Image (cartoon, rainbow, N blue to C red; front, side, top):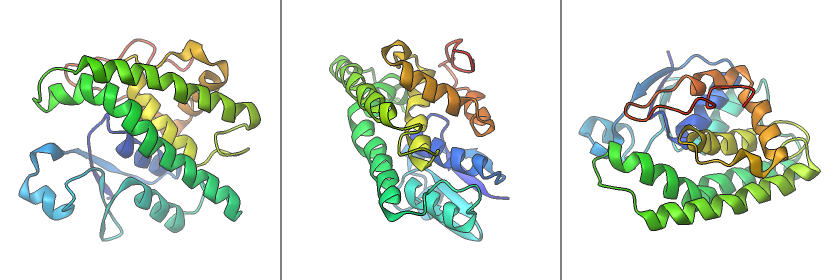
Length: 221
């Protein structure tokens, strides 16, 4: 059995979970308090980060290399285009969400509202929360611009870029920090990806002390 050491509201773990579920790869999920940096966990990944996946007799870390390893070893259904320019665009957008969006939005909203409490690191910093709430508008507008030209974020087929974006937005949706009324295009895109069977596991997630809003698991939100 493949195993993943994760936390439910990690966008990086969710991205890998979506890829594995889309490809119908069975996965056992093990919650890991990675911030405690236990010796056992540090042996699995000296970087001290999640996700960590045990697969094919290997221990894999860093979400994007894990996803590309899965894509190469389980190529059907494909989440990366064949054309080099199209593959570049997918990788560019994955980096956009895992770097820029993460730093400007996810870390300012999710980490302040949830992670700090879970990790016992105090109360949310209101300045960070305000900054994240402002920045997400810019990112939703950028997604709107992309979706004005394409069926999916990176082109006319669903790719890893869509899963990377959906992983971050689903975490924020869990804490009601996405204004879905800002963009009909983004809402329609999220409804499509949220309705996929691969998304069911994410919609079933529960974090102690943080119940999701009623719309979170609603496919007709």
